Length: 408
Image 1 (cartoon, helix red, strand yellow):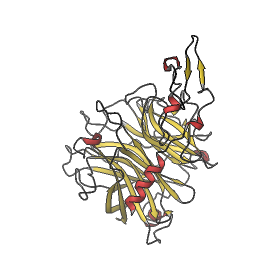
Image 2 (tube, helix red, strand yellow):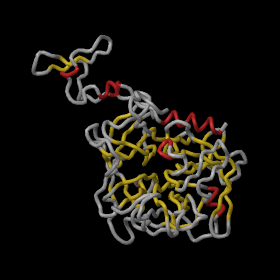
Image 3 (cartoon, one colour):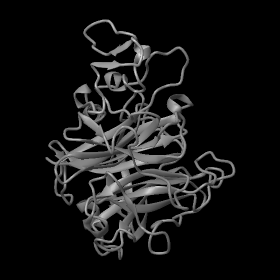
């Protein structure tokens, strides 16, 4: 039943508005050129001379109506997802505007009132809302998550800030500390723009030191509240904040043959303080390249884009462990475990049982499954009204020749 729920939710989130939300900048019915030809986009009859159509005239006509897609250029992982105070939604996503290849990753954004119809932040011409601008993130603004009442009470994202250096689980030479760090930005206008904290000790980056050596990645911070973990850790650590944080990564196999992917757990050191986090230990730490079952994908060698939630039959559960029918759920993307297909990625979910190990938390995974068997990846949870937890993912296209369409 859980697999069905997750699959349904992952279908709901990737839906995209129709042409009824076309920006007023366009008059789609007719556009007269300087010559005699007319651009006619009336879909009830054969098209006119499409060569007479101006740049992007047809984009909103053919823009997918069942999923959100960037207005142009490269896009990938969803990030910075949250429901705004007026009930509408902010959805960020990694982007490289005006380029069709990955690089110079920024956060672009879109807004929606219903998770179905979307409008680009700041217009389709430039939907970037958070982008490389400082020495610590000049290579890229990678995935981030939201603390609704964060810095000075504003919605705050904690994101991975990337410095130019070897990067990734298979990089040679290996990634070093400082290539990926975690930084803070906040918004005063509902996500249309973001303000970074100052650079320096006590400010950005707020987490820069690796928790262990020889890491294969250190990115995609996911902030969440968990009464279960708060109750379990009461008096165990000096950290007392309301938010927990996972950072995805792993330990390189050439440095430790018993290593593998890891999900590192942190907690706010003090309530209402987004700059200081206390490391509690690995939350999930399986062996590399191992499958839970034949229907459970593969852990690969490195985790990324992980998220945490708690669910029961009615939706999001916010109890301290007293609900015996609720399940703690962890979702993660895995790298290097798919034999080269699907970009060597698995999008997985796992039902988890947490344990107090005396100084932190360890986890038993009771069930593991695949979020989507097609081409959805980087799936991430975010809470919405009505005690719902929505799972959002990125559907990537394939680069095979002579393929009209592929994916899910």
